[in-house]
Length: 228
Image (cartoon, rainbow, N blue to C red; front, side, top):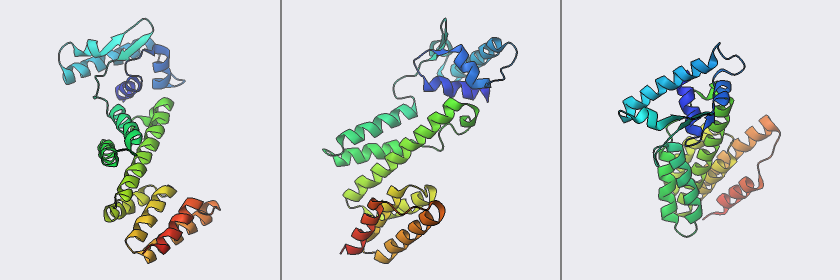
């Protein structure tokens, strides 16, 4: 597990030198083993062997290099899913107004890259990995919301309803997802179902947090009731 944590830490700073002290701190916290430098070097050596098996002879040393201050991991363009995801997400946002179909395709590619919780096996082993995982998952949900929004604008209401019924269960505190679901239900004439979703969300917010729904959610509900 230390080797997977080490790989994740190096990937977060791909192409940059990560100081040895920082790696030791993130791998072992306040209780490093005796001879932590030798322990770190041993994990680096094993990781190089792993890279050799994945990419071929000589690639371990080329990919994972040593400098005076620490180690750096070289990643080719397009190899790191998180980097590709961010590029697709940000580019889609830039072109959405001018080319909605292209933005929709980019966001679909982005969300399809997501294979589960970020850094799932190692996120609890390092404060830096945990913070990076939380940030990555926030970006993922924002991409989902933007993807759904573009499909709403293009009139794909039935698809949106099916997708959002699952997403609102998975992310029960994301008001925008419920707002989008209520809008889609209204657009398809399912006003009673939209009203039930709004009633349930409002009840949970008031009972659990003492909060009323946002103005956006209230407005979506009113529009759903008025849709013909």
